Length: 146
Image (tube, rainbow, N blue to C red; front, side, top):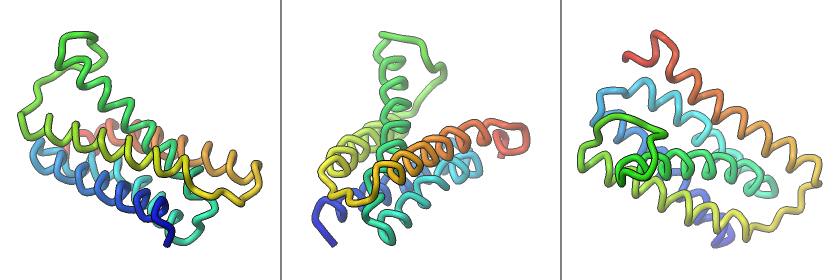
């Protein structure tokens, strides 16, 4: 496995574990398991179809980086995209998730992408929709209140 591909896979794994940890400390395990599903699927695609690695991982990393940035903008009093209280451990996890997304996204941009542009666009759009759909689903009644 190429070094950049290994970094992407490890960052997806660390992102998934961090989401489980957030769920455990916040009492929202089911919500975070739903949110994590596209991350695990992206990791599986990166391992089995490396030509699509960047296309499937970039929308996942981008989504989570945007969310973590929004949380930190709220914590720092700059913007109110999110509301709530965050424990020190949750804040640590948001920083860890953000770091995974930056490192993994940077590595994904360096991946060899021999797949056709059409396949990459379809894969990117599908994983963007999967991740955003999982986020939406995770806040639906029955899931949002473990």
